[in-house]
Image 1 (cartoon, rainbow, N blue to C red):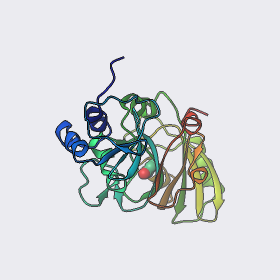
Image 2: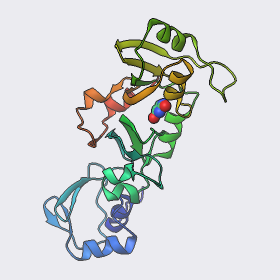
Image 3: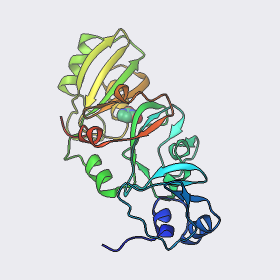
Length: 237
Ligand code: URA
């Protein structure tokens, strides 16, 4: 396979246009193996390529797969209208390489959000056919009752859905319920709670498939790259 030149490599990693990347290299901003490289036509092997830009370490990644502990007050849309956008919590390079959220959380929902620049992965994860479960913890306005749990488990009718939607549900506390969905309809948890006669006052996503936010140890607003073992947990359980 034809090797990429260093300017092209930097471009794929989100460091700007080809010209901007050439300039970075020519100005001595880029290092490999502790040496500054000023020849942008150098074509290092991208397998296990570590490099620095202005002293900051990077690893070449054909695609990025990241998990973010999304805080409240952050929009998942690409053109945020009211609140700050989720991409503002990640390195600028991610925006340039077109990293996007995998599905959306409401601006006031917190917790586990995946982001990637791999369109195939985003599509597969978002596909309703794939049934990757999403686990939410909802804080409710009214107390959680056995009837609420039963209603959510057997199914509630939402206005624009032809059939009732059901979820796995279990009470966690007087005003807290865990709800596990294997689809992702618009505002589904909040609407299901309203349909069941309660109201969601706070919503947190604690897991996607078998990947829990707790296992990642991310502070609010922090993110990490996902390794192969973590990626493998993002499958139907
Ligand atoms: N369900 C909702 O109602 N909101 C979310 O953000 C996610 C699931």
